[in-house]
Image (tube, rainbow, N blue to C red; front, top):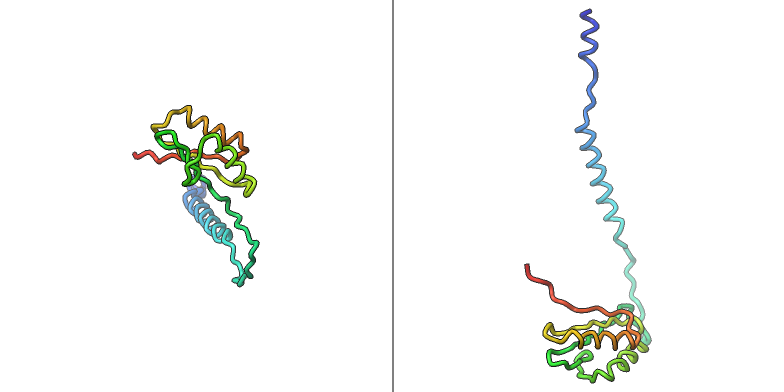
Length: 136
């Protein structure tokens, strides 16, 4: 009877903590190795110059509505009636322009909606509204 009780007491225990450590180690290893694979290593080459070269970065055009209701296209004051025509001219030059609508917070809401409507009627597809980050 004594032999039988010794066998039961000497059953192997499953230790989970070392397995968890190994799993976390493998997880960190694969995360770090994946981050190093994302970098693209290119061969340094001296590229030739061309006069017809274009930038792939879309240009952003600022449309500002001042507190007194004036509309500025970049830095130039423009009447609201000519805004759609000017925007469509910019779109024909470079179709992927981003138009950033910047309006003073004291401006009437209807004026901002009118300017936004003129942008959409002119064919502007990429319009964003500029805001400031709220202080915490």
